[in-house]
Image (cartoon, rainbow, N blue to C red; front, side, top):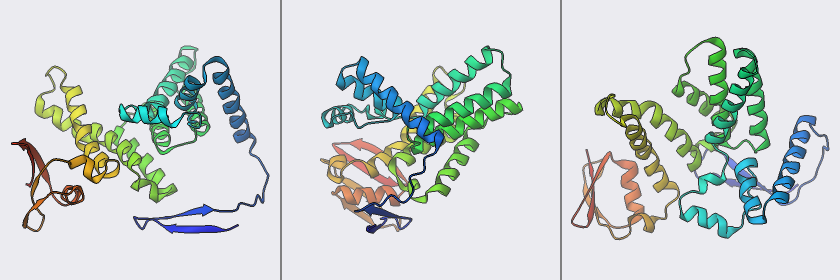
Length: 283
């Protein structure tokens, strides 16, 4: 087996690329094999009952398999800002977990019975879809919610998110440097920690204060992460001039996107637009 090691940009982990693979153990897990067969059968049913283009989208949204989506469809979803609909996310896990939980409780099961069965089904569905970081996060948080209900305790969003982050970091520290993971957990921590502060400032009795504070808090966290990971240097700041005070007190004028990203990471900042220029000032 020939491997090529590449040092990670962040110095946290390394990646191995196999040029040749030798199978040394053909043993199969009965559980994993059953889930694989269920996934293959479900995929076949989707392709049987829908046209090929739609079946590829359904397969991605339900089973987490994006192999059937063409590059044109992926680009179309990305350009319209809805590419997240093609990925299994916390919304899927929450909907499935809560649906099973309520149905089982309505059938006569108690908190423990409904909670344990729902946790088991949620874990199996997470494995079925590939157990991406967002699925693991949502799965751990949902299982903790069921467990809290069984114990009669209050569910704490930040504690559940912190435990799932610790679990992912222990499994693979390099995942913490991925943009998708930072966006996923950043949005959760924004809703749990920053949104209540903004809502308190707006007034909890104000109309739509909860929705406005949550949206604003999420944007505060996710916008810099999105800019750093996903937008090209020249695309984000094209056509703007930048005036900034660096962390050591030196004032400079920046025109390139790479320099501006440096300001993002080095300064506390407020943004205000005027006269066609965007000014980033340390505060």
